[in-house]
Image (cartoon, rainbow, N blue to C red; front, top):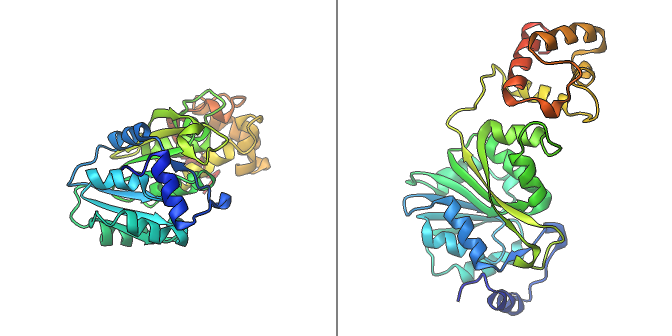
Amino acid sequence: MDIATPTRTKDIIRKHGFTFKKSLGQNFLIDKNILDKIVDAAALTKEKGALEIGPGIGALTERLAQEAGKVAAVEIDNRLIPILEEVLSPYPHVSVVHGDVLKTDLAKLWADRFAGCSEVSVVANLPYYVTTPIVMTLLEHKLPLDRIVVMVQKEVAERMAARPGGKDYGTLSIAVQYYCVPDIVCVVPSGAFIPAPNVDSAVIRLTKRPAPPVEVSDEARFFRVVHAAFAQRRKTLHNNLATLVGKARKSELAGQLEACGVKPERRGETLSLQEFATLSEALAAAGMIE
C-alpha cells in the first residue's frame, strides 16, 4: 500500500511512536493525487536524479524512487532516519542523508549521490519556515539543476510567480525569476496533510533558465539595488535608493533615474527585472554604488 494514504501514514506513525515537532514544520502528505501532480511536474526518468529535502516518512520519496534513476533524501530529524530506511528498503537506488540541507556541502552531495545522472531536479514538500532560505541556497549555489518542484505555502508560491505591479511582487519574485521560470502547478488544501497546517499550500515548478533574462556586470550589486528598492515598500524608489547611494547624492540620483526612463516617484514593486538591471548598471557607471 502507498505511504501517502491516511491509514498507512497513521500506521507508520503509530508503529514507531513518532510525534510531530511543530518547530520542524512537519506536515505529512496523504493525498496520492497531489503526489502524482508533483512527480508529473518533475518530469523524471530513469536517467535523471531527484534530490528531496525533508522527506518525512517517505511518501514522496517512494514515488520519486519509482520514477528516477537515483534519489537522495536529506532529513534533519534523526528520529525519521530509521523509519525512512525501513520503508525505502525496497529501493536500493535511494539514499537517505541525515543533515540540514542549509549546512550541507551541496556540490559534494551532487558528486557523491548523482554521478551518471543526465539531469537532477529538486522535488520536495518543504518545511514552510525555511522555504525561502532553502530555495535561494539552491539557486545561488548555481548547481547543475534542471528544475525545482516544491510544495510551499500558497502565499510564498504567489510571491515567487508574481509579476511587477502587484502587492505580491518583491525581492523574492525578482530573485527567483532571475534564475528560473516559475509556474504554479496546483493549490493544495490543508486537508491533504497530517497534521493539517493552518494555511493553504501550492506546488510550484521553477524551471532553471540557461542564462539570466537580463545582463548585469555584478549580480551582488544588482541584488543590493533590488533589496534597497524594497526596503520600505511605501516609500518611493527615489527615497529608498537614497539610503543606498547616500543622502548627499539624492538630487543626482533623481537625474540617473530619469535617464534610465524611471520616474523617481515610482515604487520598487512597479519595476521589471530589466529596469532594475539598467538602473544598477547606470548607478555603478556613475560611481554612485560599488
